[in-house]
Length: 299
Image (cartoon, rainbow, N blue to C red):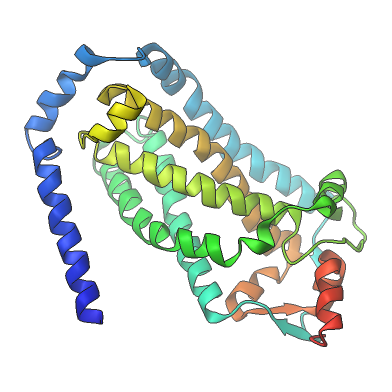
């Protein structure tokens, strides 16, 4: 079975290379093709893209990079973390497959975000080797995330569906603005985690596709041209705009996810490492799930 999988992947790679050769995405023809892009514009997105790229994107990313951690720093100092014993009863919530998929995605993000920022602020870093290395690493670490994004979407889809209790969670921000441990009637994933799930999955897939389009910038897809009516240059501009806009949300919520799991709730990150969640933490922050587990005799 393993031999057939390897043969299939090899055949797919060879087919991709053969198809790519017709598009001249490699070599000297790439430069000649790029120079001709301006002659075939469709939606005339050049002025809009130039304005966004030079006046807004970098500043918004800088605002997210500095602003979101600052908000959480103030939260930590003013409200403080919620601390649970993590030595009492535990429930095995995340199996090895869950944890492996999550950790592959986490490692991918830990490379994709800083390399993405280096690319965005390439002028500040002076271009050259550092930015080229960041670009290559950015493309390379997209591959493991692309492999696990669909399994991750499927394995937690049911838990990520919103319900009426999530409206109440948003109204009090899950009790995170209180120093007291308030019982929150949330399911296995609270509304904040669900929001991160959808941004990570839908935003991640959007960024994979738009990023691939930019990485292989002269890889022409006639079907896409026929459906959208967009020229190659305008497709690239749309891809770049989508990539940046989704990047704002993904970066902001990734920082939020890291803060919540490592600082706002002490020890919460261990659940995705060991697979076990602590009883009091579940009882306080995921009370609807706790009641269900209690009825099943798992606590």
